Image (cartoon, rainbow, N blue to C red):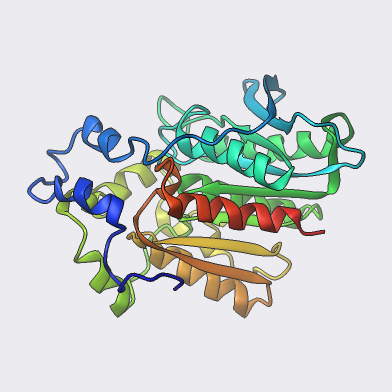
Length: 318
């Protein structure tokens, strides 16, 4: 862990805001409470980018995407990240900080093209594999249109946060099986197992520091997984739905996993990292200290900036 703070202490800028949750239960917390937690921690970053909203062909309805390209022309094709926001497969959009600010920050830092994908959300008859199919279709579209996008077809990564991290890993697994393995996968605090692995003793200790309101993953994770899988029992879910179920991860792309210190999903990210290493995959695992789940939504927080720096550094590699 790279931090000057003792383990299991919250980031100083977060501590005061989190204290307001100390007497609230998970059922009593409102959306406004979480919005207040995520109000900007500093000024927004400015980047010279061209931002283009489009709709591309999909396996169902057309898929909205938002393309972030550096404004300065390049004499060579740029790397690309196909990016997927979180939201438990049932919420989230291209405007949320985890989508928009992440895409802007990575494109600007890495001199890269970022394609943010508004995959179908589950509910009202939509379930797996619809969002998964949308992500795979978006990746293929970027690959097929690399020249028009100014993208190097050999350097197209797929990445996402939380449920988006799940979708990114599932797409990488399917594309590997099709012989079109992505350049790399960037997985931020991902949900990769249908049944959450038991936490390590260290993680269990960290989780005791979370306000009860953040225990939402234990009572509600099953509900969002049910919305994602529909009638499919978790025990028989496809590895494309939960890549932690895959029996063979060899050939998975080089992977970056970024876990949040105070996050029930950290046990999934840590176990998947071990599974990848056992399969011989090149994997880098980082612990973002002092933050709960979803720190890319905390605009202006230095921890979020550090994550964007690491993501950009991977995209700049040739």
